[in-house]
Image (cartoon, rainbow, N blue to C red):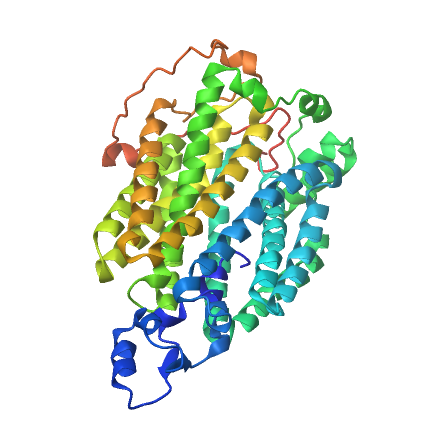
Length: 490
């Protein structure tokens, strides 16, 4: 909700028609009013005024016409804060645990949200949004870790994709709040309240067993897994828990991957996928504000389409693997971006929603595929880098949208997002298919030279047909760790 509220807090008031002519008989003002665009920018400032100044931060602080770029700047600043938040989470979660980080981040995000609702000026608001981004990113990563890490390897991939549905539900609640709330301050206030109340649920949440084992709290890890298994009406398998402390001590950083030709190529391609997918997703979502149709309806349809995209991705992933699913998704999103730049009106809105359909699936699966491509001893560093790069792509989306204020450059963002996403999607076919493959324990198990001159062998895609898609295969992604225990196994 802290992320999605930007779609409504920063409504463009001129395009939404939140202004009126001071003199009802002023023909030039009435003519501009009927155009429902930015014609008011060409009128003298003393002939028109806002109908509801508090409806948006743009109307309250006059972020229109020559100052319209500031509206996109505050959104980019939020994602800049998210980049810092990912780094903070990576540091704190190893020392405090996922559960404590989630509680602290939720409280901090709520307090910053309440402060943002009372911001006296634009620059105060932007500073608070940067801090909100830091807390929101840390809270999101901690919640995702607590939801996925206790799950056994057989179902972990599906759980990662299924978590998208809970994110979508948060977006739908945000739409309802924005539709009923009378002002942007009320929307910000109401979106912050769930964060304040969320820590009350923490007693019912189990700490990550992986983290408990890493700090030597083996008894608590077993108790938590047993409680989860009991809730699922099963029991833990009769298998010993390994020493994850030693496994974590063997974790390697990014420099090891950059010196290994095979790992380096896989990492760089997947980082490009993460950035491009995030850029297309948030770019299409923010663009819906300026397109034909009511903004609330556009966003509601967008979230509904996202749910369909995640469901389809879940089906395709289990049968064809992550590579095919991510490739189709990012290529669809990039193609839709190009078509958005070539069309207008209702047709442009259709292509924007289609791009959001593909990008949402790619965002949800990119990190899962990255984990399947790498050895276990470098996954932690690679996933942290992918999370940061994804936020860089998100930050680039509103930054590029500043160009939409120039009539001659209104379509430039689409022609940047589209080709880069298509190029990243084509590069994906250079990577191997991981369906049914096991994950190596160490970099040495991958083989391959460490020389920078070594190049990846091109693997041209085999386009699967409909029959292959629905073929019944008893295979699943082997996203495993060294000492995973599956509480669903009897």
